[in-house]
Image 1: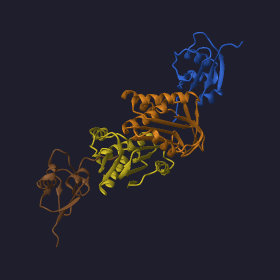
Image 2 (image 1 turned 30 degrees about the horizontal axis):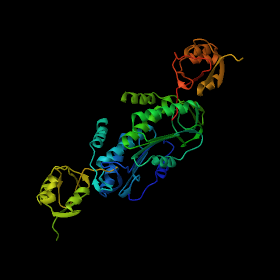
Image 3 (image 1 turned 180 degrees about the vertical axis):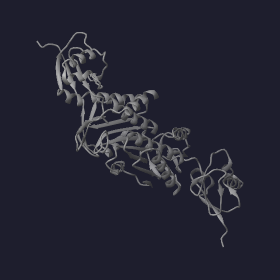
Length: 151
Length: 151
Length: 86
Length: 86
């Protein structure tokens, strides 16, 4: 399930929902991204997140489907917030449950890595001195490409 | 922080606590292991978990320290339950927060993999037909060794 | 009867630089993404940056596209900077 | 005055097979883990399995040890099957 929303989310409730996939679930891996004080700029006080409605959901569904072809994925959950966010706010949640831990970890990390380089979100950092559209990182692109090499 | 306990835990509260490491936290990775219906045996209805009090905590602290030397780890949390557990119960929780997602994922997965092959816990599977001490898996040993090769 | 058109959308830094969120242009026979981009860049001013040094990504009908991807009447074409979510 | 001893603990399958959770044996000069294991195995019956085909792990004073690790008076030595937590 995919949610793109301005509201915050509760990681505990999401974790609980992933436990409901059935008696064959042995592993839950989750990732949560938070607004931190230094990104491209230091002294970050908040972010503004823009996205491309419609395309975003399609791209993320494609990543979940791809993860399901590569690993045993019983249930996958992606939440991404948009709009204004404050320091330490939750930005993104990816949770995967599986029979085995290797699959849960791999699918969760793959979805997260690929989301960063292919889902149409744009992040603007806000500091006391001004605003700045974040630049895409070569390391993020390299991390996503490394999953292709592994295939 | 390390807890070895018979009681259940709340993944949501643990997640919330990991958010409290400070404004430099950008990433939280968690893993939760659950009792699933098929392990060495099928039709598993529960587990019994034994451990070596004192040594367990020392070994896990050593793994957390090692993770902290290899990656940026702002806070790490490990909970492992002992005693009788029912189907779908939570067994283990590993949570790590870091500035960056790569470090959070790697440290979390390393601690979990190494815990499985070096922390003195023993799992007995319980089915309607009887009980069975779980055998260590070659794949688990190989996963732990792969972290050494990566170093 | 309305003329066949292509809807163009801009996001993030591009939207701000061009001060344009969306526009509609007449559909052209045998057009591609790169042809459309060149025609927009020829407007001059900030539009010239569309074919400048900064990387521009493109989606046609909400799927990632290439310079050679065809653009037909009724299509939605989006231009945006490399994505930075997560 | 009490004799210098070594405390031995067994866990999981070993504890069940030997029907022994803990025992105390006299400390022996220049003893190692493998020497102690051989002396326990010589008790026969289920104890012989300690040097049999099944893998046995050992910790001395709660740290993983090897066959050559020395065992001294006052030490706590634990024997157990390969671990299966998590």
